[in-house]
Image 1 (cartoon, chains in turn cyan, yellow):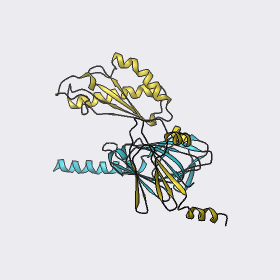
Image 2 (cartoon, chains in turn blue, orange; image 1 turned 45 degrees about the vertical axis):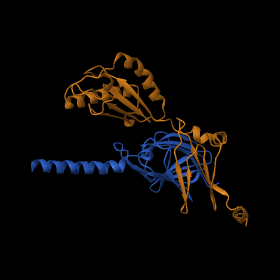
Image 3 (cartoon, chains in turn red, orange; image 1 turned 120 degrees about the vertical axis):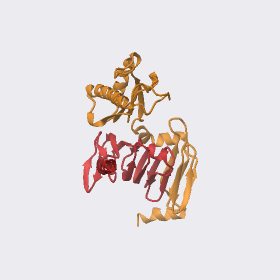
Length: 148
Length: 192
């Protein structure tokens, strides 16, 4: 009895820890920022900088001379070209099981991608959308260009 | 009117290219797959430099050339962040001190890590199967912490530095319990 109560308490603690973690864990980090690069987050617009964390539901916007390199938590690498707009729609990653979900949208501009552990673990767990298409990523390196 | 003319021309030509998806070989030369779906129609890219050109009306697949892709998209390809890397350092038995070999290698590895922009580091300690599970949990953590401290001493930002001990749970070389194995007494440094 004592034992099960302890287990329940431990499980509750884990749940709380999990919830807190899900809230604050970043999806990725800027490793390179050149020219004008902004992050739209919860209605605010922030200037991007090297070392700045990126979160699920953020949108990255580059100016005509801007570009950015981002490394995500599952080791996905992205390079965003000038005059581009990339929204991180969804990012979930379990670093123990490698289960996850990564959905982003390139509404304009150029994007080079090296997919990471999410795409490797499960076919179609990573998707990139463009204004007209959906890309199911089954590995690993590719370029997307939208809105010529 | 000015915007309608090109649009009409596009329609006549059965769709101008508005989006392009190009599959690339990876660093080892292996080629993955990308399934491009548009309005219920699917195009599968599975060859190196295979390109889906998405027009206003159609999706067409072309072979693409390596030289053209590298020329046209050079800034984006060159602008990818450095590839994540993993290093291994080995330890003296029942100690959080490095072996003589690893002690020699460590400065170059740590300097290399320090050069990467905004590097995020995860240090994971491991032990062989000598001693109890709980003792090895502590020993693996002490090994990871020793490397963490080295990085911190070099001025590495602690906010981007995580460490953990995995005890004897993840041997590189499987052994029976209470067997010493030098290759399992290690720390993995994962950098991205």
